[in-house]
Length: 554
Ligand SMILES: CC(=O)SCCNC(=O)CCNC(=O)[C@H](O)C(C)(C)COP(=O)(O)OP(=O)(O)OC[C@H]1O[C@@H](n2cnc3c(N)ncnc32)[C@H](O)[C@@H]1OP(=O)(O)O
Ligand SMILES: CC(C)C(=O)C(=O)O
Ligand SMILES: [Mg+2]
Image (tube, rainbow, N blue to C red; front, side):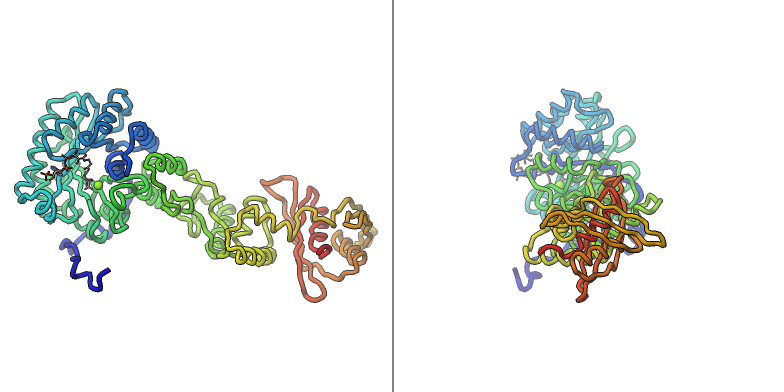
């Protein structure tokens, strides 16, 4: 890299718009969406989709609720041409869906485009030509007037062909490609000239699409450009202003959102941001961003995993595990303080009667897009007590007391530090069982017990225990079952301890009829140990927890 990049790169122009209105606005409704996965996305694949893949993608887009879909660049390839024919001839286009196709401003290509669209019920013809100074000079070697003429004469040809084929309900889209680095007044001038030919009205709908073909500036500059265009375009109310952000600077989503605030009404993009170079704007992220603010995006991603899988198959590109809303890790917290907050959030949510989603670190409920809560918390050396506790609660119904959470967390931390790995649920459960029970640990199995009131608040206990040496009888008295069992165990094993902490609960939805009991014992030298018991009978569970807390084995 250069020490002084200013020798090589110049900042792009901004727009003078001191009274800009967009910063004070909010997004309150969904824009019109156009998926260009089958065109802009497709043209960016090492192996463009064949018709079978295109068809599967098309079906998916319909399922998600897209009403405008750019299906091809029909003059580019026979595959693209035939795909349009297939959709039309096999009557695969629902009544409320409009297909769109792209063409350069070249007469033969326009003819071919209309041949592809023959007998379509409803179609948008999309014309583009680059308008920025660099492209005028280098690619087209044409003056401003010649560039305008290119767009105007192609529009004239398109209008004539539309009028010659009245069986189709036509819409026209014009894109001054490279809009974001075209002089704002020249972008206006060329769009005015094109619109003068098309004469947009209710019967002749027109979309003016203002692409950030290469993202070259911060999103606020794109928003200024859009607001400037909207304010000065003479036929503003007769056209739909569309945007088409790319993602070269990684701010495609932000650019789209600010451009919508600035007056755009329609967004073109791709699912998960596929597209030329660093991609088109991600329509899933945009839609879900609206959703997370309580605004219906009018698109359906209820089964996000399935959408990801299909798009990965069709594009033969992976969706990044941290892709917003859709990546495998998009809702996963590994770190302790995140897990703690999420766990508290879920507990509060369960207790609350409100339908509002108030969850630390999770902008939307994973459940709304078909994801379970399983992936929300995963445990490694960055995790604290809440992560492991959450996993045991979610999967085994155990609501660990705070002290036990801390104790278990220390053991988990030792293991994850030692191994450097994530701890899976089964590894966590195995460790928990080795440490605390909750079922009968070898060498301390409660076979049966009998308790009797002796009057005056005294209870006597008679129990049989399976130990490593065989069946053992225990007898003791106390003011309750646990104290009687404690006395019996102390006497039998010659061990001194005190019960410091006791908790119990039913296993709820995990098992209506079973209970879990948790006990912490302290021993002579201040050492403490936890034991856990689960049983159909809460008393048995508590005695088993007591047995499991004792250092009877190794
Ligand atoms: C930003 C975007 O995504 S724009 C869409 C880009 N998508 C694609 O290009 C995918 C499909 N394209 C193709 O398959 C081919 O480019 C075709 C079939 C359209 C044309 O192929 P070819 O005729 O071989 O031409 P090629 O692509 O090399 O075109 C370059 C020529 O078209 C001109 N051109 C480029 N864009 C346009 C345009 N929008 N309108 C008119 N002429 C254009 C160039 O100036 C150049 O002209 P020159 O040969 O006189 O110098
Ligand atoms: C054809 C146009 C709209 C395009 O894809 C772009 O400018 O990125
Ligand atoms: Mg594009």
